[in-house]
Length: 216
Image (cartoon, rainbow, N blue to C red; front, side):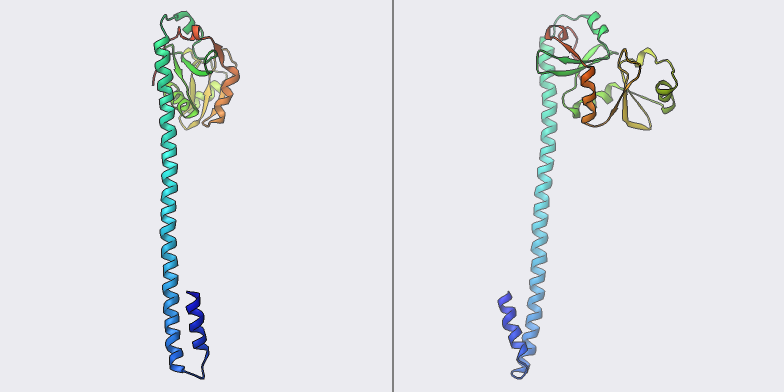
């Protein structure tokens, strides 16, 4: 393309000779430049669209893949524990109700022992954990939650060991951990769940398998 441009420019530059030919060459030069510019813009758009589609597909496949693997992991662990859970100890379930349990003799799986039904729920990765927290938690009017947080209103028994949030602010979740003066504030993010580790209780396989497995 640049070769033809230089050739035509030379023809246009020679004004003393072949004036008519120079005008004709200039027209050809302009037409070629328009064609070249259009070609570049068109091919760039095509390449850009293809690249963008490929990137979107990769991101989508990755997200869906991780989501499927997370659900598969939860299902696998639940099936394993349901199979290995036989004798149920109601007193143990009641004593540990509302707490986060770590399966110390396995791979450190974290379970939430729901105080309402006395069943343990595998938390899995943060994505699955937030789903369980929201499913098993309770939403309160903002004013009522403020009374429990700042105005020393007695917390009712049905909120002990529960995850609670205000209707107007579902991203801030308070965990009313049993035997604690103040609830633990959790932001709806992956890092926030790390705050649960120091207050979790390690439980042996023998004991944790005396607690019924719950599924969402």
